[in-house]
Image (cartoon, rainbow over all chains, first blue to last red; front, side, top):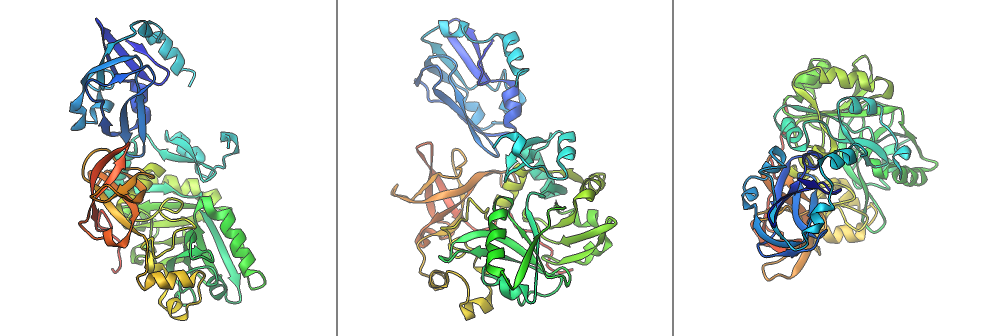
Length: 121
Length: 370
């Protein structure tokens, strides 16, 4: 698993990257009451808006940590947005992206680097 | 403003110790939520009792020969007719009939009037009030006092254990009394739609009173996040969002803030506009919306009619935990401000179905008689 400074995580299998937000981000957001996942086939560049998570108080963008095409979206979050709080780094994933620039993944932080980054916040 | 410039309420240390997430609000470092989070804090307040620190709000005394008469130059309410032991809501008006702030004024004792204004507005309010009342009445800021709100269906039983007199008060009663061993001013009112009290007490005693109330298992500390969702569900406008200097109290649906005697006398600021609006000549009015699909519509989201034409804007919106869905307050032309009217809210470019519903979203539970 790789991480961004915006608190997204990426898990890659083959050329497919599963994307979500970290436990830290989910805790900071508070109770998630609505999730907007991307449409299938949407093409994103690294850093583009990919999804939106909403707590009682505010809406927050989730950015694409990697470039590519959305090949699957976690539509189950529509009925169960609380999954993002319960299991942010597994069942609370937002989308699967078919990588167009695989090298982007290697440039992201690993778990140790992300933990070190969190300790600076 | 950097965090170092933020003011602290007398309860700052208590919030930090309780694990609050502190945010800048109205120039203060305030708790937006505690460990339970906004959703649970909101629901706890609706079911039990929530304790809020609202010490950022401005408390002041107006004193003079007839401070109520002097104050009426600036506000919409009939304050000369305000009975001892009562408080009444009003708006501070500009000369165009726009709202400079909304406030509560009470007559808790025979020491003039006691006012509570919004934290973000207080410096401006006091300057305006002092100038208008010059030579007739004075404004004394009560900077050394804290303000706590205890809200929820169990608030009355909790407070009565410490302040027996609280049990015999009804909604909007406001009295000066000795409570928790200090000089306090207690009103039976609040900003959640629930029964409850606001307690003004000396800053030096605030933490002791706060902790005493929290010792009761029915009470939990509640942050500003839940305060906002609670007031939104209660259909209560928030100054700076649902009201500002361009919005009149009639547009904001706060006609009750304009006293009957004041209407008859026509002696308030902005009377030309407000009397015309009271007679029905209105361009926009506040409505409550239930968002029927999609994401919550937040402040700034456009409101469209069924043809897609933009007809208004959302001024407060979010998720209502007790409603169990997205709700909003916004402004639309009167013709569309009809219960059941089908509208759209535009969220991130997408039109979503919304419907005009009655206010409040959640029935209020004020105790009007005992």
